[in-house]
Length: 115
Length: 114
View 1 (spheres, rainbow over the protein chains, first blue to last red):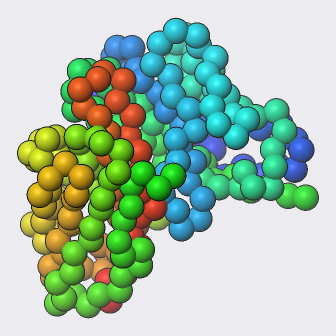
View 2 (view 1 turned 30 degrees about the vertical axis):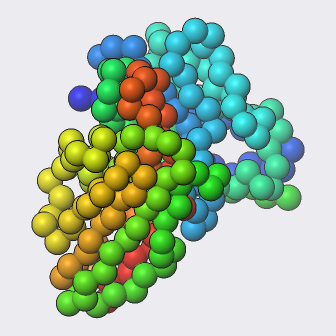
View 3 (view 1 turned 90 degrees about the horizontal axis):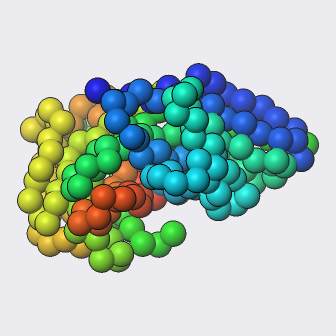
C-alpha cells in the first residue's frame, strides 16, 4: 500500500528566509507526486506535481520540488518565503494507473511565518 | 480557483437532522470525489464517482449517502450524524481518461454536528 510521511508537523521560518518541507513516500512503482497548500478555512490548491521527466519541478507561487527516487523523497522548497505563504502543506502520492487515481495524503505540515 | 464550488460553506446540524452538501465542478471533468478532513488526521477518501458510477466507497457509514446525478454535480446526503462526524468535507474532481490525472479541490464545507 502506498503511504506518505511528512515528518514535520509544524515549521516556523522568518519572512525572507528559505524553506524546505520534507515528504517521504512509499510506493511500489513509479509514483505520481503532488504538493497541495491549504489556507485556513479553504480547500486544497495544487502547487505542483511530478509525473515523469525532469526531477526538479517548478510550481506556482515560486515553489519547487525535487523528486529523489533513491531517497523516496519529494521535498518542497522556496528560496524566500512571504507572509502569505503561511498555510498548511500536504504532500500526496497517486497511482500511475490509467483510470481511477487514488491519492494518499500525508498528515500535513503547518507553516508559520514570523516577521 | 473557482473550478470546483461547494455549498454551503458552513453547516451546523443536530444529530436528528437531514441535510445535503452540494458540489459542482466547472472543469469538464468526469470523476468526482468526497473527502473528509478531520483535525490532526490525513485526508480520508470517502467516495469516488467515475462517469456518474460509484467506483469506491471506503467503508463509509450509511449515514453518509452520496449522489451523482451527472458528471458535474455531486451531493452528500447526511442523516442522523454523530458529533465525531464534524469535519471539513472536501469535494474534488479530475479527468479520468488520462494517466496523469490531477485532482482539483473545492473550498470545502465546514460541518458541525451538535
